Length: 236
Image 1 (spheres, helix red, strand yellow):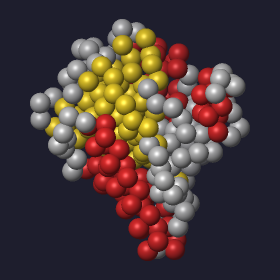
Image 2 (image 1 turned 90 degrees about the vertical axis):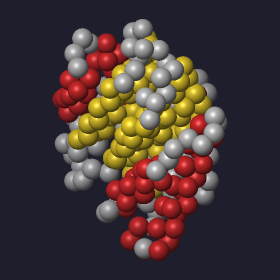
Image 3 (image 1 turned 180 degrees about the vertical axis):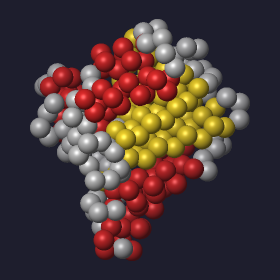
Image 4 (image 1 turned 30 degrees about the horizontal axis):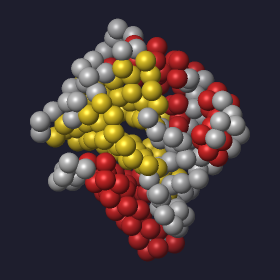
């Protein structure tokens, strides 16, 4: 398995509140986590870092890995709330949080917010996670199209997050993997600026996975780079 990460501050932000984690484990397993913090000043960065710390020592202890990932998100919720109560400058901070545990044949995930997981299998791209945003809710109801959701004026309004909601209410699930598949975790600074068709083209190109990520970042910057941009890419 090959894994690469990339992050860029973007062209309009003063700091980078995105964070990602890659933990390579035994038996060709890997834990991938991405978080996009929010909260003003240093709050977003702190929330995202606390979220990743909640996963840093994670190792599966049962066959129900998705449920364990959900528990780690709830642990992140507790840690962020405790920190925000202790420091007035951090009150209201929160983060999106998307975690993926990959084995040779399966992927288990848990998710809150609008960071995403994509799965490319035999040239076909599937978006695994739903966005917990206003347009994400409308898309799920069938009231708007995916392209309308991508450019919706309330695209950055979260309906769920870790730390800034009383209950994060994460989603979770699992899907199968085969050799040659790609799995991508991305922050909204990436998938809000390039389409699923572009992502498919970049992932399908006959180049290294680092070069694929470089091309995606370049495309986002050419499209305006209005937010922090982060991606984690694994080739099975």
